[in-house]
Length: 133
Ligand SMILES: CC(C)(COP(=O)(O)OP(=O)(O)OC[C@H]1O[C@@H](n2cnc3c(N)ncnc32)[C@H](O)[C@@H]1OP(=O)(O)O)[C@@H](O)C(=O)NCCC(=O)NCCS
Image (cartoon, rainbow, N blue to C red; front, side, top):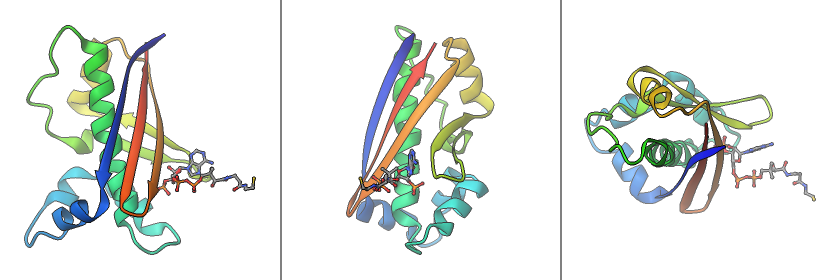
């Protein structure tokens, strides 16, 4: 049974500006080492659209989890986006792994599985998530 859905769009140039803010820990704080390595391994040689799509995936996952939790609110202290990790297989198929507080929240919401699709083209990166109970 579908417990919630979430979608998010990220404008890649704005996202790049965030990544490049001098002294910013945004990238290291938001993405796991595996996510950063995957983005850097893509043939384009530019990790930005891949990271932007993964950022969209984290936000879309929070939306889907929020719907699954309803009518209870999404706790405000869920600020560690690295706890929502985008994995991918050898054929580039993406999936989501939850860690820490976000994982506990999904268990509380009765979410057994999250499904993820990513896309990026030019200045736009997007993600769609379905939460399954
Ligand atoms: C699967 C496929 C449709 C993906 O298309 P794409 O244009 O590369 O996808 P987008 O640029 O919109 O999105 C890229 C994201 O798609 C996802 N993706 C790539 N291959 C995927 C696959 N096999 N299954 C699911 N998701 C996939 C990845 O998350 C990727 O993001 P990442 O590179 O940051 O990890 C394409 O690679 C493909 O294999 N097409 C079938 C063969 C074909 O092209 N035939 C043409 C003649 S009919």
